[in-house]
Structure formats: C-alpha cells, structure tokens
Amino acid sequence: MREGRRRALAEFRRRHDELAAGGGVPAALAHSPGASRQWVSDELTQAAHTVAERTRAEADFRLGALWRRTATAVWGAVALLLAGQAVTAALGAGWTTGRTAGLVAALAGAAALTAAARLHRARGGVLAPVIGEDNRLSTSRAVAAVWVLLASYSVLVLAVGLAAAPGSDARARLLAGPDLERGAGLLTVLALSCAAAVAAQRTVALRVRAQRLQKVRADRPRAADLLTDDSGRGSFTDVQYVLVSGVAAVFAAVRLARRPGELPDLPWGLALLVAISAVTYLAGKYAEGGRPVILSVVRSREVGDLDAPIRTGDDIEIRGSGFVPPGAEAPDRLARTTVRIGAVHVHVPLVPVAGGFANPADAVLTVPVPVEVEPGRVEVQVITAAGVETNRYPIDVLD
Image (cartoon, rainbow, N blue to C red; front, side):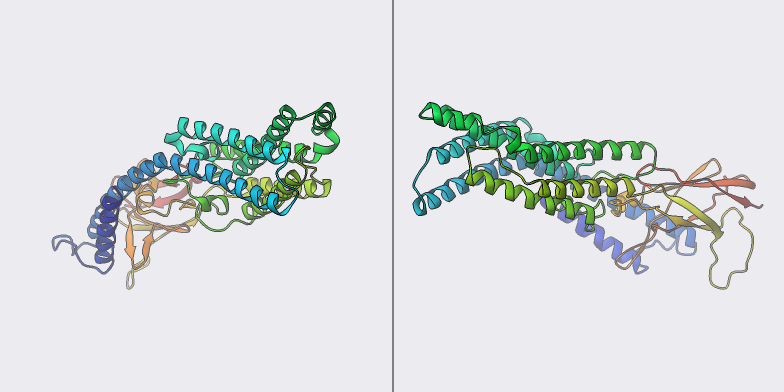
C-alpha cells in the first residue's frame, strides 16, 4: 500500500515537471494556449486524484494499525513508572504503601486504556477522543485529556491507598486527601481545560457553518497538529497552550509523587497562568481564518496584446484573498477550486511551474470566460476547495 502511493507520487512529480517545462503536450493542441492549458490541467488533475486515493488508503491503514502503538506507549509509561519507583525506593526509604498504590493505579489505568484502544482501533486507539472532525489532533482536546487522566489517576491512587491502608489513622488521612482546599487548583484547571475544549469545538463549528472559517479534512492525524495550524505552520496560540499546560501538568505530577495520599495541590498562581493561556488559545480560535473575498476582476492581458474590454473567450484575473484554504495545497484539492461566472461554473485550471502551481493561488485566480456566458453584466463568485463562497463581483462581458 505504501509502495503503491510512492509510485503514484513519483509518477505525478515526473509528469508535473515534464508539463511545467513545456513538454508532453500533444502537437494538435500546441497551437492553442487555452486548449493546451486545459489539457495539462486535466492530465495533472487525474494524476493527483490517483495520488490522493492511494494516500487516503494508506492513511486509513496506518490509522487502523495505530492502536497497537498507543497501547504499547501506555504500557511503556507503566514500565517507566515502575523503574522510577524502584530507583527512588532504593535511594530513599524503601518501598512504601504509596508506591504500591501508584503502581496498582497505573496498571488499572493502563488496562482500561488498552481496552478502550482496542474498542476504537479503527480510529487510532487511545488517540480517538483527541482526533477532531477534520481528522487532525485537537490541541484543546489533548490538553483536556492530559488533565482528565492526571485527575483520574490521582483519585485512583487515593482509592487504592485507602483500600490498602493498615489502620484507622491512615484511612482518615487518606479520606482527607480529596478535600477541596487541597485539590481546588487542580479541579479549577481541569474545569477550564474541558470548557476550553468544548468552547473551541463549538466556535470552530459555528464559524465553519457561517462560512467565516475554511476547514479542509486532513489525510491523517499527525503529532505536529498539536503545535501547528491547518497548513502545517507553527501556531503561537497552540504552542503556548501546550507549553504552559504541559509545565503545569508536570508540576502537578511531581506534587502527586511527593504526596500520593492527597490530590496534587496546584498553586493558584499556576492555575491562573493556565487560565490565561486557555483564554489566549480560545481568542486565537475565534480570530483565525476569515471568509475568502474578491477584491477586483480584470481582463488578463498577454504581452503585446491590446487593451480591450472583457469578451467571451478571454482570460480574466480574479484578485482577492483566501482562495486556497489552509491544508488545501495538495493538487487534488487545488483542482476543486471553481469560479461561477453568471450561470456557468468554470473549474480553475492547474498551471504547473517549477516547485508547484502558478494557478490557482491564494490571492489570484485566472480562468477563461466560456462562450456559454451571456453578454452583459454578470456576477463572478469563487467557490474554494472547502466549499466556501466569496462575495459576488459584477463584471461586464461584451460580444
């Protein structure tokens, strides 16, 4: 499956480079720039669809096989915990009831996560709850999941310790461990992270439905999704949220290791820092994206051509922004870009150049005006690969 994708990708790149250099065009079409451009676009679109089909098949296979890796990672964490406890026990006061409670709680949690991973093996195993609707790892869900696991593990350690407590005094101390004054900071951060995950999902869904945010489904989830935007570029809001939450979670884990008989006492200053980070993340979610817009439409002029009004058969250049959504840079998705001219839908042709495509671009599209367009005033509208429509821009088409 992977080899088939590699062969299809190599063939597409070879074909792309050949056509970008001006070779491979049939002699019968070479005299017509418009016909040869459309033929080149169709050839590349067909090859890109083949690559996309192989890529999706490989992605589904890898996602289905991921559950074993996630289960292995969970049990690897348990092994590291055991090794750490053994080392600290040898250097410290020996093996204690708290260490036993921590290990038993880890084994019980790992067994539950392994069962959940097998149940959701077609969706990435343990990672299934943190994969968003766009098939990317969700930063807000991942952060919330870390706090949920940490809080659940802390309570499980207390429960195991209470069951193994040797006397009434020890049981009384453990029963006082979950008191609110000790775990208020942890519970506050847990509530904030879960609320941020729900609010982020709701914000994205509403903005997509209102066509204020363009979302394109990814081929498969990647670890880099936690720190990048949909186009793969580093995102400040995501990075700071993961960094601050990760540092706070490490602090809480250390406090739990030092005092396994209590909920981690997270200081209010650290809880406030996480809250500020979560608000910044949500503000970034609300501010990102935007609806694509047409700013102007002009007649495309070749070198040596005379200035003239727009007529059927001419190329028009549509200028604006947001024509290529983040994550839609793949050729098969670029080929989905469409322009509505009056009642006629025109697929934007792919124009290959060295290293990529000159058309379509995020700020400029070039399309021909078909002869089916009725002369007179017509409206131009771009439909992106995400299915979002721009504003309507009127132009005059002459006979």
